Amino acid sequence: MEISCEVIRGNPVEQLALASLGAFAVVVGRHGSGGYSGMRIGSVVHGLLHRAECPVITVPGSLRG
Image (cartoon, rainbow, N blue to C red; front, side, top):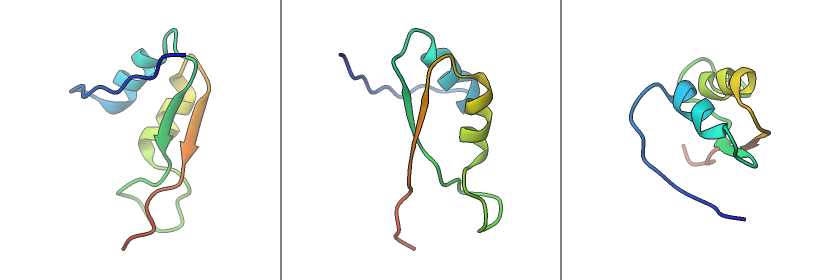
């Protein structure tokens, strides 16, 4: 299995959805920078869950304040 890391410009949801084509999985942080404190996932993860062509794995964000 190959793991890759890239920096790509553009709409995060669109770019991650494109990256999901042919991927084993997409791994993303689940805590967004906006919204309210009760949100469990950010808008990017929410959008990606509806558009990804592979499983989406979420990991918790940093506990640093």
